[in-house]
Structures are given as structure tokens and as C-alpha cells.
Image 1: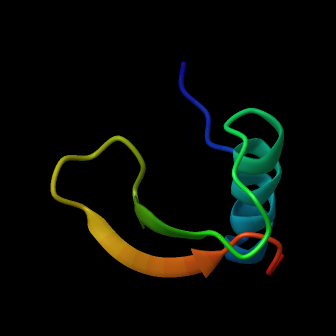
Image 2 (image 1 turned 135 degrees about the vertical axis):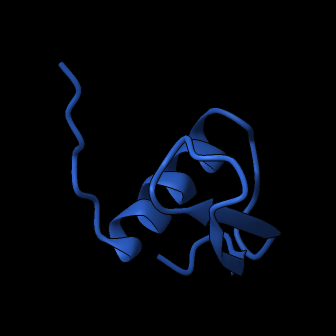
Amino acid sequence: MSFCVKVETDEMFAIANQWLTEEMNFLKNDKVVIVAGTPPNKEAATNLIRVMKIGEF
């Protein structure tokens, strides 16, 4: 049995922002590139690339 949890894009960025600051020690205004795709775990399904500034979300 498989299941999928729907996460809105802004929520995904907020989660990434929190993880990067708390676990990876990134600082406010550092820039990172977020690459994602749907459906998840499918090869060559990238359809989102974003340069995000830490603290933006």
C-alpha cells in the first residue's frame, strides 16, 4: 500500500527553510537552490527549480 501526503509549495519551502537553518546552519539571506518534481520519486520528473533566500519563508 502506498500513500502520498499533499504538501503545498510554500509549505515545502518553509519546511526546507527551517531544516536548513536548524540542521545545516545556513544563515539568513544565504541563497539555496531548491529542485523538486512531481510525482515524487520518479526519475526525470523535475518541474520546479527555485533560488530561495533563507528567511524568505
